[in-house]
Image (cartoon, rainbow, N blue to C red; front, top):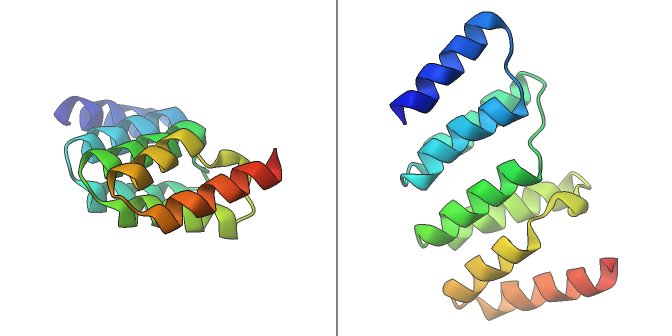
Amino acid sequence: MDGALEFFRKAEADGTLNVDIWTALISAHADNGYLEMAFQFVTEMERAGIQGNITTWTTLVSAAEKHDNIHYAQNIFQKLQQNGKIEDIPWTAMLKAATKAMDLHFGKYCWILIFLIS
């Protein structure tokens, strides 16, 4: 995490922050179980006018699944759906998180949406 934070600070000082650098910082925290901090970085990224991409969302959903927290995955899903960004939903990671959490209702809902947008 320290390396990601150091790289982030350098890019911030250079004025070269982009979605990939933000995603690296988010990933470093999310992968190590700091999901709340990772979500705070998403908020900061968006305040800076940078939108997450499929890599950002997949990183967060995969970390939520890894750390047994389906609620974070569902929050991402709702956020993207509400913002009309259904094409950015990482469906495979979302279904994996729902399966691991044994949340059949959420998993079924994902499958229905996948079917409808296909």
